[in-house]
Image 1: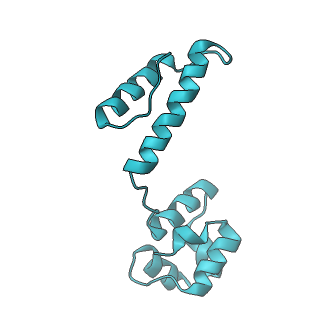
Image 2 (image 1 turned 135 degrees about the vertical axis):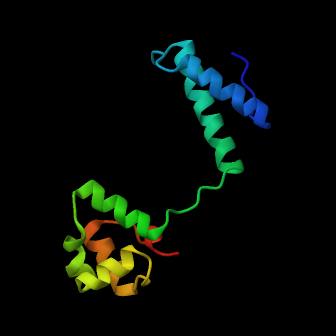
Length: 116
């Protein structure tokens, strides 16, 4: 196993291809160890070269609604009315601090995802 830091996009692509080859290797084998190390190196490269932007707040709300099987009407207690729910989800009204706190508390959506 000759593993070096990933410094170029080409080496990154090669590492991803090798991970695909090693995927499913047994733990505590040379292949399993190589897979673990390559994953760590790829993650480090991605953190340095690819910025992960926070999700759009409305998309975060819709995603959580889907996960929880909620409908727009279920958000009325959080937003304070049917019209307000519709306006927020259609991006015609901004979230208020009160709404953000309620979404965080009731739906467990991280506040960082709601602030932007």
